Length: 120
Image (tube, rainbow, N blue to C red; front, side):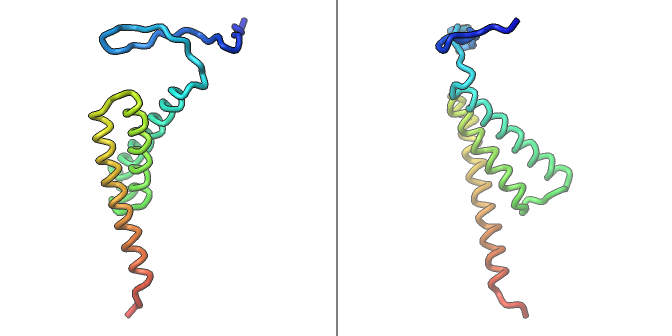
């Protein structure tokens, strides 16, 4: 039999909180923390897919797909790790984002230059 909840009543969840131990909190299934977790999962999948593609030689480092996956993945992981105060991971993902964005900008710029130069 399914439980029903009043509008302001949600199941209790024990959340581990540093040295304080488990803290009981009411959990709203639509709370922002679930969206933060979704961002974390999307970021993890994007970075893993990028790594798998480059490792299996399906793409190269100059591939837009590879750089976009890294950019998307690092951006999502920045949101997730900053929310959870995992600042060393946030910094790593910020550096990852800067590398991906600058490389993607170079790829786009060089492609634009190639199309504007006359063929000889």
